Image (cartoon, rainbow, N blue to C red):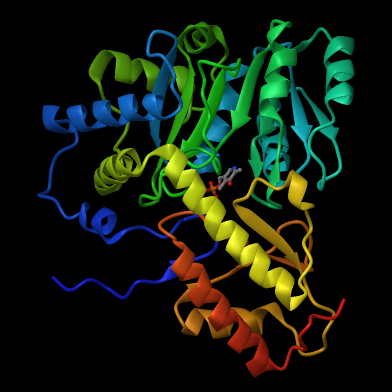
Length: 374
Ligand SMILES: *Cc1c(COP(=O)(O)O)cnc(C)c1O
């Protein structure tokens, strides 16, 4: 079988996959209720715990069929008891999505809005938490994929630890990229999906959370039929299976991607992403581009880049040029005058070099002035 041409995705997920991950999906048809498939899911669940050093005595991993938003939906709809509130530390587009989920489910929430270009203000957080005894869940996003911002989740967890609150972190765009050790901090729930840091195919999302808290949540009023956390957890507990049809071939790609991550090593993998990021940033700075987030606040995985004030610049024309040459770039999320480039997935130094050569020829061909005018 001939492999399709390699394309480079610089959008923040689905990420560029290796050929071996693509090919791992070609398997004999299998009914996912067979023991063979249960064993596959079991090994994925164990490997996910290992990636964040989460002890299986304390944490469980629960797999779902869906994209990342499905597990945000699951945690938010399952973990906030009636008559209690969730506090959302909101400094970006993805925590804003969590706010929307709360409003859809009619969950009481405090939307603690902060500037989108700075990490969470810990004093403001602590004061808000101290002032309201009804807060039982605290929620934030580790790496804000809308901007590239990194939030101080360890510091936040130290504050939540002294209160009887559950701390949920959206680690969808940092899991298996930024090393995280759950034995060393006090985070109760994290989540991610197959197509970001793991760099497999889209279709599987998962939660890693404290088993005791998942079991406690069985007493809450159920708000979702498909995404209720306890329901899915208990199905794994009793039957080693997802409640409903899993994304069969995606799970084979996840198994292969996890194997490749183990071989590379998480520390090396993060170094590779950072190396790509640094090269991307250097070459853009050289052209005169400016960024939405200051370097000291950036997680080192994604750049939100300000549009040049050049009459020949349009995002669409540079996008189309790059796309025709095998590189996908992505619009902004903060406002309409930014675009985004990320280094998730199976991308190396050389890919960024090739991309930047293409991007520079693209700017030249549409007549954008260098250095960039602001
Ligand atoms: C990608 C992402 C999500 C989920 O988005 P989907 O469109 O459902 O894949 C949630 N949070 C963060 C931080 C993300 O990067």
